[in-house]
Length: 145
Image (cartoon, rainbow, N blue to C red; front, side, top):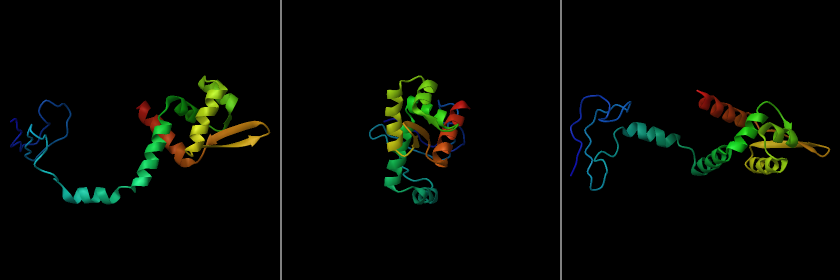
């Protein structure tokens, strides 16, 4: 039964470049692949648990991130980051048909990411609020680093 025991000096885990440091002895058995230590820092665990959002909030946030994660929708949101645009202009920007853009905008509207106003027969879309703007900015900034 393979085990990892007695590693007390600080250093990276064996065979892993840039891994987190470790200072505690941990025994891992191949039988059930679990650690004998279940909680190394109980105070930190309790603080983290107390800070967790409510499950329904986590679910809604997860759905939002899934919606935003689609490349076509992210392109549309990036274009709307600069200001409102009509459907035909959005189609020209992202290289999709007006029908495809309208479909994606319906999905984004349903998830409260964009809103629109009508002027005659033309619908002008924009990002719903500063939270969406910050989310898109952060995602694009992070990706470009």
